[in-house]
Length: 511
Image (tube, rainbow, N blue to C red):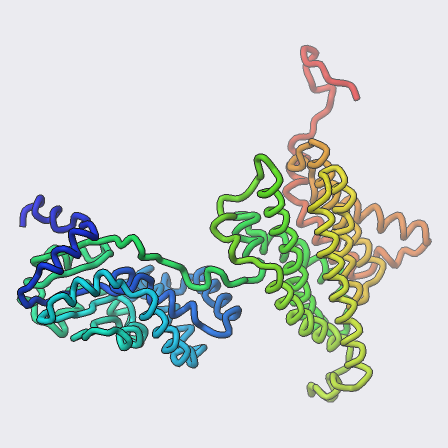
């Protein structure tokens, strides 16, 4: 085949051209139809994944899979992006096997609402045609949809569940050739929307590459709420906010301030982690509201490039559902960390269910939920007030962010000093920014180091109690704040110079 002939075969056809040909094709023919976004005006794999229940947990699993990309670690012949859908389908089907039954009902709805009726009308104009559906989708997903069509499909050729990685690496003509002879394939009519089918289009007699106007690719769980997703992907995309802000800054400072003095730090850290996630579920609601208000009231709102793409994933209630559930288990873990549940090298779970401990748990949970509610209300006030007033609302948010955890856990003087240092590190740079300065020039880590040392020295001196400075917790926190400020200290050292070293031709601005 000449280059021009091949280009003609791979040229995109119009819907009208394709439908007219099929209606006029009175001779009995083999018609091979792609399924996703061709016969079905949706993507069957994404629709299947979108039906997984419980939805919230499934959304997180899919998000984690996309973050880890396990398909990248498979051997070349069965790995790579080509196998992404297979891994996703395999994992969630194994974890949520009941979804196969849920899918049958959804498949009926898809067949009723999203089948390409124009294409169906064209291919059924003459009943002598042999209709074959060939797809890189999965047979067990496609079959329930086809079952509810009002015309006969003679053959379904798709990817197998367990061997999908192998099937998805094959060209579509090779999949078809397992059930239909090559001469038949070469004489057939092929209708597809995918340029991945180029090798198939090149060998058939009547190729039609068509992009259907009504077809839509809707990613699975597009509107499902995932805790911290908005913060990571919308508010601060590309800044690794979960790692840099939540884990390294917020959570770790709380661990140093609270968990180090717990009788059972492992339980305490586990509970603290859950509570931090719960807190940020509510805190990111404030971020979302902030963006909405900016979009509504500001002439030139500063919104990320991903805001309009993902804003539908947020609503006002799902973060609260997550926060309450995470808070219950988080407070439970912290309560467990205060109880002597190890007796004779055995874990005595029954100690957790003593009446007084259950009462303590629900009292602490109630106090913590009040902290979350206070955080939300404070953020509402922050979002709706002017920028200068926000300077004085912002530290209240930081009080909830750091000192709110004292509602469910105890600390000591060293821990409180660290939390106060953290509050100032958040507030001072923000105030500089709101007053027109450049917060990036402010050495936050060095500032925390100095505040922490000064406060500890001042209190130890004022109380005439040197034991504060010999406490292991003080030393551990000191090492942490020094390590966090290391790069800033090196930069300050390298940029420091004596005024006497400046040449006389340079003049300095006096303070």
